[in-house]
Structures are given as structure tokens and as C-alpha cells.
Amino acid sequence: MFQYIVRRLLWTIPVLLAIMTATFILAHAIPGGPFDFRGEKQLPESIRKNLERKYQLDKPVYVQLGKWIWDALRLDLGPSYTSRAQTVNDILKRTFPISFQLGILALLLALCIGIPMGTIAAVKQNTVVDYGATFVAILGVSIPNVVLGPLLIWIFALKLGWFPAARWGTDYTQLVLGFFPPITSAKFWLHAILPAFTLGTAYSASIARLTRASLLQVIREEYMRTAYAKGLHSRRVIILHGLRNSLIPVATVLGPMFAAVVTGSMVVEQIFGIPGMGRYFVTSVTNRDYPLVMGATLVYSLLLVFANLLVDISYAWLDPRIRYD
Image 1 (cartoon, rainbow, N blue to C red):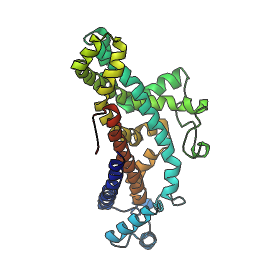
Image 2: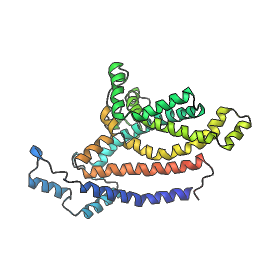
Image 3: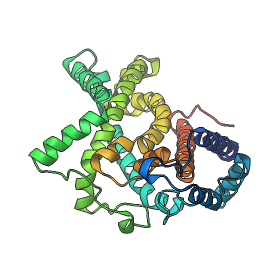
Image 4: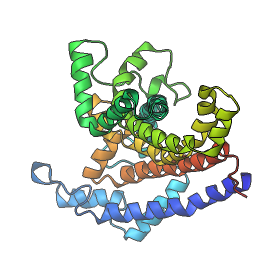
């Protein structure tokens, strides 16, 4: 296992270099530049050239790429073209923990709802409970965040007044160790519930459908019938023998889902006015802020690579027959 982990970590180096190169080329292939403003905001030609010279945009693309990779290896992601008083490191340090907290809460919510709902639906197959759980799962997948978010704000924030309508319950200056939220803060949880529920609903529905389908296959296996024949309680058979094996397909999708939850929070962050990384990523693409686009993409890529590695490691725990030698 240790050799496998080391081998996978070494493979991340060429993968990340390929992603960084492709992202750099695609970002520079978009027509226009970061200082090509139109209308009243258009800069004089001399100022535009001076800015391009300052940020070395007048050099060949391969020179810019080599410099960016070298700086990134030294954990220096460069200045932001649009937020000129800040570097990309400053922006990511301030916004990434908030996006990460929202993503983790949404994923935990999806697991806590999806796995029990899928398990109950499989055990109660072709009953009212099964049909009800399936209906709720399909409903959860069908409602997009852009509809569910404003609907929750209207009901629980504006009509009932139970939760705040926008913003996040903490900022980067209040984080424990610069990363973790103050979990005893009621303000943090009140602000987090609606966005986490909005983001996690669709994923909980997907996990429920996957858990139900996988568990239905496992229930029909010979070892499950043997466990029942031994007189074991049905709840123990389902949880200890059935559910653990049926979670392998669920674990397979958790890697991409983890990255998608963290990176896919852009819409939710916009709806709830959360100062996370997603909002900066969207504006950086439209403003041709190359360093910020590259920095955010690099963070997303690292998340995806390590999430997939954790999923592969979890296979050995879920099914001891799996070996990585």
C-alpha cells in the first residue's frame, strides 16, 4: 500500500504539469487581453504596453509559461491583474477555506441523507417507502441550485426569518489555525445551513439512487443468504455485510464528487453572497486575469488528484480482497 501511495503521488507531478500547461495555453488562446478595455475604460496605448511589460505579457508564451511553472513550484502564484493590491496567494488564502468549508458541509450532508435513504429504499423494495424515497431522490436531482437556493431564501429567510439570507458566518481572520471554522459559533451554523443544503441536495439524491441500486445487487448474493440462514438479525446483516460492500460504487463517485462540490459552489456562492473562491474564479475568467485563473485551476486539480487517491485507498478498507501490490 505504501509503495502504491508513493507511486500515485509521483504520477501527480506529470499530471499537474500537463494540466498547468493546457490551462495556460487555453487561457492565452482566448481573444483579448487583461488590459484590452473598451469604451470609456479603454487605456491609452502607452499605458497598456507599460502594464504588459510590467507583467511580462510582451514576452513569448513559452517564456511566460516557464516562468509561471517555476514560480508555482516555489508556491508563488504571482500578482492578480484585477486586484492589483493583492497576490493570487492572498486571494486563495482568504477565499479557499470558505469554499472548502461549504463543500465539506454539503458533502457530509449528502452522505448523511443519501446513504440511509438509499439503504431504506433497497430494504423496502417495491413498497411505499421505496417509491417515496425514489421520488424524493429524483426530485432532488431535478431541482437546480439556481432554483432551490432562492426558494429556500424566500421561505426560511424572508418569510420565517429562521436563517440569514446571505453572507458567511465567519471570515478568514476568525478561522482556527487559519483554516477550520469556529464550530461552536451559532452564527457560523446559521449562515451555513441554507447554502450547504442547497449544494448538497442534488448530491444526496445521486448517492441515494446509487446506494439503492448497489445494495439491491448485494442483497441477492450467496453470502447474504448465508448470513440470514445463520440467524443473524436482519439489521446487522444489512449494515455489516451488505452496506459495506455496496458502498464501493458510492466511493468511486466520491472523488470526482468531492472536487465538484468544492469547485461547483460558484452558483451557490453567488446566490448567497458567500465570499468564496468560486466567485473570484468566474470573474477572473471574464477579466482575463491569467494568474488567478491558473492558481484556481491548480488548486482544483490538486483537490481532484488527492480525492481520487483517497477513494482508491478506501477500496482496500471496503473490500479486503483488493490489493495494490
